[in-house]
Length: 331
Image (tube, rainbow, N blue to C red):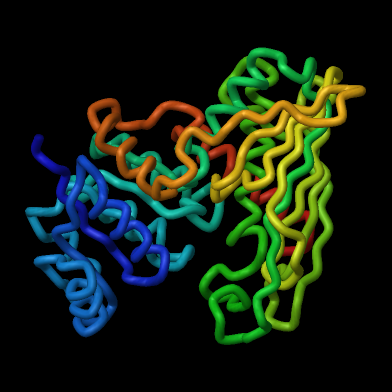
Protein backbone atom coordinates (compact mmCIF):
# COMPACT_ATOMS: atom_id res chain seq x y z
CA UNK A 1 0.00 0.00 0.00
CA UNK A 2 1.35 3.40 -1.00
CA UNK A 3 1.68 5.64 2.04
CA UNK A 4 0.54 9.25 2.12
CA UNK A 5 3.45 11.65 2.23
CA UNK A 6 3.04 14.19 5.03
CA UNK A 7 4.65 17.57 5.59
CA UNK A 8 4.57 19.10 9.06
CA UNK A 9 4.31 22.89 9.07
CA UNK A 10 5.48 24.15 12.46
CA UNK A 11 7.81 22.13 14.66
CA UNK A 12 6.53 22.60 18.22
CA UNK A 13 5.25 20.22 20.88
CA UNK A 14 2.02 19.19 19.16
CA UNK A 15 3.88 18.63 15.88
CA UNK A 16 6.06 16.05 17.64
CA UNK A 17 2.97 14.15 18.76
CA UNK A 18 1.67 14.02 15.21
CA UNK A 19 5.06 13.01 13.83
CA UNK A 20 5.10 10.02 16.18
CA UNK A 21 1.52 9.12 15.24
CA UNK A 22 2.21 9.33 11.52
CA UNK A 23 5.44 7.36 11.91
CA UNK A 24 3.55 4.57 13.67
CA UNK A 25 0.63 4.55 11.24
CA UNK A 26 -0.15 2.07 8.48
CA UNK A 27 -1.00 4.79 5.98
CA UNK A 28 1.45 7.68 6.29
CA UNK A 29 5.05 8.80 6.41
CA UNK A 30 6.56 12.21 7.20
CA UNK A 31 8.68 13.40 4.29
CA UNK A 32 9.17 17.08 5.18
CA UNK A 33 9.29 19.46 8.11
CA UNK A 34 8.99 23.24 7.83
CA UNK A 35 9.95 25.76 10.49
CA UNK A 36 10.58 29.49 10.68
CA UNK A 37 14.30 28.70 10.81
CA UNK A 38 16.44 26.15 9.01
CA UNK A 39 17.95 25.10 12.33
CA UNK A 40 14.53 24.35 13.84
CA UNK A 41 13.49 22.27 10.84
CA UNK A 42 16.80 20.38 10.81
CA UNK A 43 16.55 19.53 14.51
CA UNK A 44 12.99 18.23 14.03
CA UNK A 45 13.96 16.30 10.91
CA UNK A 46 16.88 14.66 12.69
CA UNK A 47 14.68 13.65 15.65
CA UNK A 48 12.09 11.95 13.43
CA UNK A 49 14.31 10.89 10.51
CA UNK A 50 12.51 13.17 8.08
CA UNK A 51 14.32 13.50 4.72
CA UNK A 52 13.51 17.16 3.98
CA UNK A 53 14.02 20.10 6.35
CA UNK A 54 12.71 23.48 5.14
CA UNK A 55 13.67 26.80 6.69
CA UNK A 56 10.33 28.39 5.80
CA UNK A 57 6.72 27.31 5.54
CA UNK A 58 6.60 28.40 1.89
CA UNK A 59 9.45 26.04 1.04
CA UNK A 60 7.55 23.12 2.51
CA UNK A 61 4.44 23.94 0.44
CA UNK A 62 6.61 24.06 -2.69
CA UNK A 63 7.95 20.55 -2.07
CA UNK A 64 6.28 18.30 -4.68
CA UNK A 65 6.74 15.20 -2.50
CA UNK A 66 4.32 16.53 0.15
CA UNK A 67 0.73 15.40 -0.33
CA UNK A 68 -0.80 16.24 3.07
CA UNK A 69 0.14 19.14 5.34
CA UNK A 70 -0.39 19.21 9.09
CA UNK A 71 -0.75 22.84 10.23
CA UNK A 72 0.90 23.07 13.67
CA UNK A 73 1.71 26.76 13.98
CA UNK A 74 0.27 28.94 16.77
CA UNK A 75 -3.44 29.70 16.27
CA UNK A 76 -3.17 33.11 14.55
CA UNK A 77 -1.24 31.64 11.59
CA UNK A 78 -3.54 28.68 10.91
CA UNK A 79 -5.77 30.53 8.44
CA UNK A 80 -2.99 31.96 6.27
CA UNK A 81 -1.03 28.74 5.94
CA UNK A 82 -4.04 26.48 5.58
CA UNK A 83 -5.27 28.64 2.71
CA UNK A 84 -1.82 28.74 1.11
CA UNK A 85 -1.53 24.97 1.46
CA UNK A 86 -4.91 24.49 -0.23
CA UNK A 87 -3.81 26.82 -3.03
CA UNK A 88 -0.73 24.60 -3.44
CA UNK A 89 -3.00 21.57 -3.82
CA UNK A 90 -2.09 20.02 -0.47
CA UNK A 91 -4.59 18.11 1.65
CA UNK A 92 -4.98 19.44 5.18
CA UNK A 93 -5.10 18.40 8.80
CA UNK A 94 -5.28 21.66 10.76
CA UNK A 95 -4.67 21.77 14.50
CA UNK A 96 -7.54 23.10 16.58
CA UNK A 97 -8.87 25.72 16.68
CA UNK A 98 -8.95 25.80 12.90
CA UNK A 99 -8.59 29.59 13.06
CA UNK A 100 -9.04 32.47 15.49
CA UNK A 101 -12.65 33.18 14.47
CA UNK A 102 -15.57 32.11 12.32
CA UNK A 103 -14.78 34.50 9.47
CA UNK A 104 -11.33 33.00 8.98
CA UNK A 105 -12.68 29.47 9.35
CA UNK A 106 -15.12 30.21 6.56
CA UNK A 107 -12.20 31.37 4.38
CA UNK A 108 -10.25 28.15 5.03
CA UNK A 109 -13.24 25.97 4.19
CA UNK A 110 -13.86 28.00 1.02
CA UNK A 111 -10.24 27.43 -0.02
CA UNK A 112 -10.50 23.68 0.60
CA UNK A 113 -13.65 23.58 -1.53
CA UNK A 114 -12.20 25.77 -4.29
CA UNK A 115 -8.97 23.78 -4.61
CA UNK A 116 -10.64 20.41 -3.98
CA UNK A 117 -8.52 19.25 -1.04
CA UNK A 118 -9.24 17.26 2.10
CA UNK A 119 -9.64 19.31 5.30
CA UNK A 120 -10.05 18.19 8.91
CA UNK A 121 -9.84 20.18 12.14
CA UNK A 122 -7.72 18.13 14.54
CA UNK A 123 -9.91 17.48 17.55
CA UNK A 124 -8.31 14.12 18.24
CA UNK A 125 -10.92 12.87 20.75
CA UNK A 126 -13.65 13.21 18.10
CA UNK A 127 -11.80 10.55 16.06
CA UNK A 128 -11.22 8.12 18.93
CA UNK A 129 -13.36 4.96 19.40
CA UNK A 130 -14.09 5.94 23.03
CA UNK A 131 -16.14 8.88 21.77
CA UNK A 132 -18.05 6.55 19.45
CA UNK A 133 -19.04 4.49 22.53
CA UNK A 134 -20.85 7.30 24.34
CA UNK A 135 -22.31 8.69 21.11
CA UNK A 136 -23.87 5.27 20.44
CA UNK A 137 -25.26 5.09 23.98
CA UNK A 138 -26.86 8.51 23.61
CA UNK A 139 -28.27 7.64 20.20
CA UNK A 140 -29.81 4.43 21.61
CA UNK A 141 -31.48 6.30 24.48
CA UNK A 142 -29.46 4.69 27.27
CA UNK A 143 -30.16 7.69 29.55
CA UNK A 144 -33.56 8.60 28.17
CA UNK A 145 -33.78 12.18 26.91
CA UNK A 146 -30.61 14.21 27.33
CA UNK A 147 -31.32 17.31 29.42
CA UNK A 148 -28.04 18.59 30.89
CA UNK A 149 -24.33 18.52 30.10
CA UNK A 150 -21.35 19.31 32.31
CA UNK A 151 -17.89 19.45 30.76
CA UNK A 152 -14.57 21.00 31.73
CA UNK A 153 -11.03 21.22 30.41
CA UNK A 154 -9.07 23.45 32.74
CA UNK A 155 -5.53 23.29 34.12
CA UNK A 156 -3.18 25.57 36.02
CA UNK A 157 -0.01 26.48 34.16
CA UNK A 158 2.54 28.66 35.98
CA UNK A 159 1.96 32.28 35.07
CA UNK A 160 4.51 33.40 32.51
CA UNK A 161 3.70 36.32 30.21
CA UNK A 162 6.14 34.89 27.63
CA UNK A 163 4.36 31.52 27.53
CA UNK A 164 2.01 31.22 24.54
CA UNK A 165 -0.87 30.35 26.91
CA UNK A 166 -0.72 33.88 28.38
CA UNK A 167 0.33 35.69 25.19
CA UNK A 168 -2.54 37.48 23.47
CA UNK A 169 -0.49 37.94 20.32
CA UNK A 170 -0.29 34.21 19.66
CA UNK A 171 -3.89 33.40 20.57
CA UNK A 172 -3.42 32.56 24.23
CA UNK A 173 -6.18 32.06 26.76
CA UNK A 174 -8.43 29.27 27.93
CA UNK A 175 -11.26 29.47 25.40
CA UNK A 176 -9.06 29.20 22.30
CA UNK A 177 -6.60 26.74 23.80
CA UNK A 178 -8.90 24.24 25.52
CA UNK A 179 -12.43 25.71 25.60
CA UNK A 180 -13.06 24.12 22.24
CA UNK A 181 -13.04 20.70 23.87
CA UNK A 182 -16.04 21.08 26.18
CA UNK A 183 -17.86 23.21 23.61
CA UNK A 184 -17.40 20.66 20.83
CA UNK A 185 -18.38 17.83 23.19
CA UNK A 186 -21.58 19.64 24.21
CA UNK A 187 -22.48 20.40 20.61
CA UNK A 188 -21.89 16.75 19.66
CA UNK A 189 -23.86 15.38 22.61
CA UNK A 190 -26.82 17.71 22.07
CA UNK A 191 -26.85 16.99 18.36
CA UNK A 192 -26.72 13.24 18.87
CA UNK A 193 -29.65 13.47 21.29
CA UNK A 194 -31.62 15.37 18.65
CA UNK A 195 -30.80 12.90 15.88
CA UNK A 196 -28.33 15.08 14.01
CA UNK A 197 -24.51 15.40 13.87
CA UNK A 198 -24.33 18.45 16.17
CA UNK A 199 -26.59 21.08 17.71
CA UNK A 200 -25.94 24.80 17.94
CA UNK A 201 -26.51 27.14 20.90
CA UNK A 202 -29.80 28.98 21.12
CA UNK A 203 -28.25 31.19 23.79
CA UNK A 204 -24.91 31.52 25.55
CA UNK A 205 -24.01 33.38 28.72
CA UNK A 206 -20.34 33.56 29.66
CA UNK A 207 -18.11 34.83 32.44
CA UNK A 208 -14.35 34.77 32.72
CA UNK A 209 -11.28 36.28 34.29
CA UNK A 210 -9.11 38.37 31.98
CA UNK A 211 -5.59 38.43 33.38
CA UNK A 212 -2.88 41.11 33.17
CA UNK A 213 -1.75 39.97 29.71
CA UNK A 214 -5.24 40.37 28.25
CA UNK A 215 -6.17 36.71 27.88
CA UNK A 216 -8.94 34.72 29.54
CA UNK A 217 -7.16 32.73 32.24
CA UNK A 218 -10.34 30.84 33.09
CA UNK A 219 -13.92 31.03 31.88
CA UNK A 220 -17.34 29.42 32.12
CA UNK A 221 -20.34 29.31 29.82
CA UNK A 222 -24.00 28.42 30.30
CA UNK A 223 -25.36 27.26 26.97
CA UNK A 224 -28.94 26.39 25.96
CA UNK A 225 -29.54 24.00 23.06
CA UNK A 226 -32.84 22.97 21.45
CA UNK A 227 -35.17 20.67 23.41
CA UNK A 228 -34.21 22.45 26.65
CA UNK A 229 -30.75 20.89 26.83
CA UNK A 230 -28.55 22.97 29.14
CA UNK A 231 -24.73 22.79 29.14
CA UNK A 232 -22.37 24.07 31.84
CA UNK A 233 -18.89 24.45 30.34
CA UNK A 234 -15.58 25.44 31.92
CA UNK A 235 -12.08 26.00 30.60
CA UNK A 236 -8.84 27.56 31.79
CA UNK A 237 -5.06 27.73 31.56
CA UNK A 238 -4.50 29.13 35.09
CA UNK A 239 -7.03 27.24 37.21
CA UNK A 240 -7.11 23.50 37.85
CA UNK A 241 -10.61 22.14 37.29
CA UNK A 242 -9.72 18.93 35.48
CA UNK A 243 -11.16 17.24 32.44
CA UNK A 244 -14.69 15.99 32.88
CA UNK A 245 -17.85 15.15 31.01
CA UNK A 246 -21.25 14.15 32.38
CA UNK A 247 -24.39 13.78 30.31
CA UNK A 248 -27.62 13.78 32.32
CA UNK A 249 -30.85 12.31 30.99
CA UNK A 250 -34.34 11.53 32.21
CA UNK A 251 -33.37 7.89 32.89
CA UNK A 252 -29.79 8.12 34.16
CA UNK A 253 -26.50 9.74 33.22
CA UNK A 254 -23.24 9.01 31.44
CA UNK A 255 -19.92 9.81 33.08
CA UNK A 256 -16.77 9.98 30.95
CA UNK A 257 -13.81 10.24 33.35
CA UNK A 258 -11.26 11.00 30.62
CA UNK A 259 -13.27 12.46 27.73
CA UNK A 260 -10.51 14.16 25.74
CA UNK A 261 -7.34 12.08 26.13
CA UNK A 262 -9.46 8.92 25.97
CA UNK A 263 -7.64 6.69 28.44
CA UNK A 264 -10.67 5.82 30.58
CA UNK A 265 -14.04 4.17 30.24
CA UNK A 266 -17.66 5.23 29.86
CA UNK A 267 -19.87 4.79 32.95
CA UNK A 268 -23.64 4.47 32.69
CA UNK A 269 -25.45 5.30 35.94
CA UNK A 270 -29.08 4.38 36.43
CA UNK A 271 -31.38 5.65 39.24
CA UNK A 272 -31.26 3.50 42.38
CA UNK A 273 -28.20 1.52 41.24
CA UNK A 274 -25.11 1.67 43.46
CA UNK A 275 -22.55 0.91 40.75
CA UNK A 276 -22.36 2.03 37.13
CA UNK A 277 -22.43 -0.22 34.11
CA UNK A 278 -18.97 0.16 32.61
CA UNK A 279 -18.35 0.27 28.88
CA UNK A 280 -14.65 -0.44 28.23
CA UNK A 281 -12.49 1.76 26.08
CA UNK A 282 -12.00 -0.03 22.73
CA UNK A 283 -8.44 1.29 22.31
CA UNK A 284 -7.05 2.38 25.72
CA UNK A 285 -3.39 1.95 24.78
CA UNK A 286 -3.43 3.21 21.21
CA UNK A 287 -1.70 6.43 20.20
CA UNK A 288 -4.32 9.13 20.78
CA UNK A 289 -3.45 10.95 17.57
CA UNK A 290 -3.24 7.89 15.33
CA UNK A 291 -6.98 7.82 14.66
CA UNK A 292 -7.11 11.24 13.02
CA UNK A 293 -4.08 10.30 10.91
CA UNK A 294 -5.84 7.16 9.68
CA UNK A 295 -9.09 9.05 9.05
CA UNK A 296 -7.28 11.41 6.68
CA UNK A 297 -6.14 8.47 4.58
CA UNK A 298 -9.48 6.67 4.71
CA UNK A 299 -11.55 9.66 3.61
CA UNK A 300 -9.17 11.59 1.38
CA UNK A 301 -11.31 10.94 -1.68
CA UNK A 302 -14.44 12.44 -0.11
CA UNK A 303 -12.50 15.46 1.23
CA UNK A 304 -14.13 15.22 4.69
CA UNK A 305 -14.08 12.67 7.48
CA UNK A 306 -17.56 11.69 8.77
CA UNK A 307 -19.03 12.64 12.15
CA UNK A 308 -18.20 12.47 14.99
CA UNK A 309 -14.96 13.79 13.44
CA UNK A 310 -15.15 17.49 12.64
CA UNK A 311 -16.92 17.99 9.33
CA UNK A 312 -16.63 21.38 7.66
CA UNK A 313 -19.99 22.73 8.80
CA UNK A 314 -19.21 21.47 12.30
CA UNK A 315 -15.91 23.39 12.35
CA UNK A 316 -17.61 26.57 11.17
CA UNK A 317 -20.35 26.32 13.79
CA UNK A 318 -17.74 25.50 16.42
CA UNK A 319 -15.89 28.71 15.56
CA UNK A 320 -19.12 30.68 15.80
CA UNK A 321 -19.80 29.25 19.26
CA UNK A 322 -16.30 30.11 20.48
CA UNK A 323 -16.68 33.63 19.07
CA UNK A 324 -19.84 34.02 21.18
CA UNK A 325 -18.09 32.69 24.29
CA UNK A 326 -15.10 35.03 23.86
CA UNK A 327 -17.38 38.00 23.27
CA UNK A 328 -19.41 37.13 26.35
CA UNK A 329 -16.33 37.31 28.61
CA UNK A 330 -15.16 40.60 27.06
CA UNK A 331 -12.70 39.53 24.38
